[in-house]
Length: 241
Image (tube, rainbow, N blue to C red; front, side, top):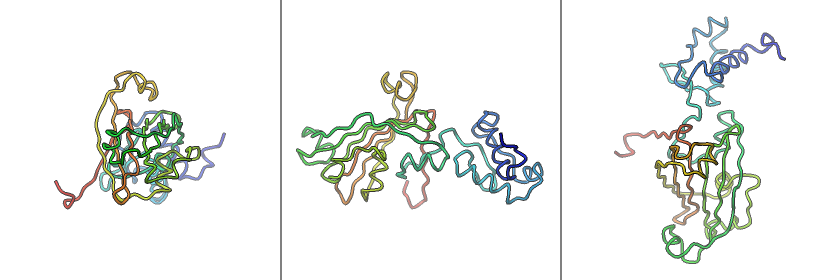
């Protein structure tokens, strides 16, 4: 076992503060001791303390607010409503281990009504992929996605072994427009089992469509356990009411 006294002081400060969070001593919303108090406690410079806190903020463990201080973040952090970010990047930013399972993948041809609802021409083919995402081994979200083969013909042969569909699309297919719809739902028995929830547990659902120059690229429905996620958005006065 490493002697904590032999650790660089900044690492020891971060390790001890993170320990208070992981143990539950500091719950979400708890105010972290201010920098000057930590400087006094550890007999160190402001730079050393600031580096430790910055690392914790980058990992998603705390939220730093100018003039207000630092606070313990919610367990699953915040998700920006209008930002399209893949699960792997989110996990890396928060210092979590991301894994995923492809539950099913098949090529389909929607009927005329479904094609019209998707904005596709009759007879157009799609790839439908269902996935389960995990953070540190804990189910984080269930994804049901369709990809238009007219817009993304390469998806015909892609099996998503190396990257989940959302990540693969972000890296390979440009998009020019997106639409988000957020709603609430209660988990049915099957969904609850996949997400490790009790039947009828509350969930948040994000429905997203993306287009490239007017052509539909993908439609995805992502379901999150409501107690592990929240959506946020920040707007300026010019964004409209």
